[in-house]
Image 1 (cartoon, rainbow, N blue to C red):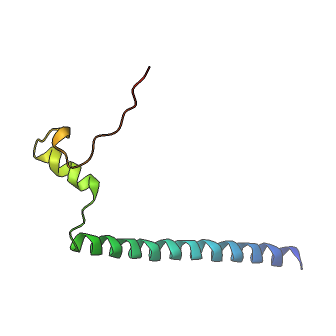
Image 2 (cartoon, rainbow, N blue to C red):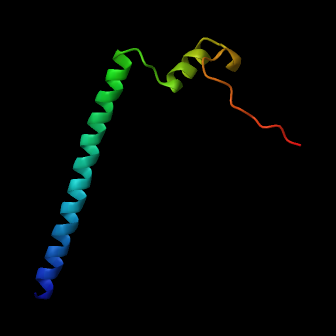
Image 3 (cartoon, rainbow, N blue to C red):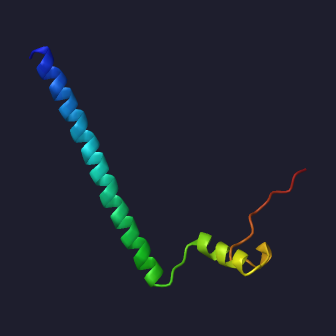
Length: 75
């Protein structure tokens, strides 16, 4: 194998690997969006959305539907 063939093959393999990675990311993004849309259609909401709604209503963090973070007592 001469030098030019080796370089061309290396670039081709790298390009193929990157193209497959991008394709996988695009397909996974679509699947995640479909899953999220399905959950939202069934009434399941994201916690960030619930916290943002509570903040928009002017509710205090205690009135948030999220549980308060647990804090350990220090000696």
